[in-house]
Length: 69
Image (cartoon, rainbow, N blue to C red; front, side, top):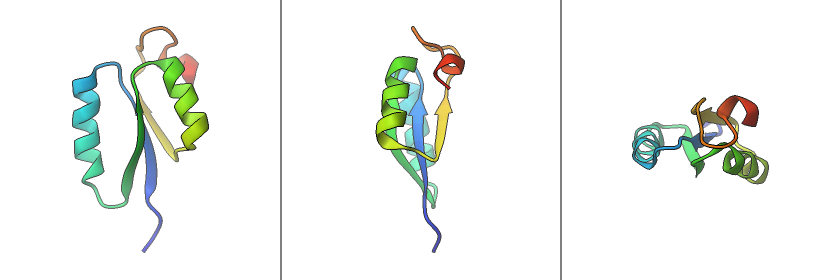
């Protein structure tokens, strides 16, 4: 079996993050390693967690998704 894809979810609305985590987390081969609600938090979590993929909203409070990337 191959390794799982480690995903960091970045979304300002908690209900959307919860839904995405539920849907993606149930997919074989995908592991949600963390969640963030704004751009600054996403940078810190990306450095700490080293995900394979970051699924981010573009328009985030404070530091936007594009700037965070």
